[in-house]
Image (cartoon, rainbow, N blue to C red; front, side, top):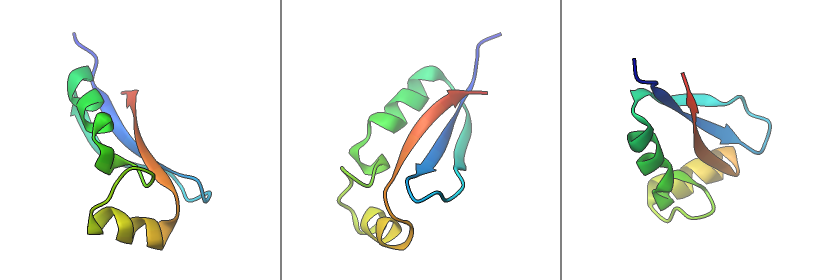
Length: 65
């Protein structure tokens, strides 16, 4: 059976991590995390900027389920 992965949003501020997606293949998880919009440091959309303003610095990472 192939492993599945979940996307976890990690916060610098000490806010509890949040599972964003689950049941992904390794390639899907890597593709998500390689998107510049999945980090407060590289994202530029209004959604990313608003999320950063509300919650502080963050990034999405993946882990095996």
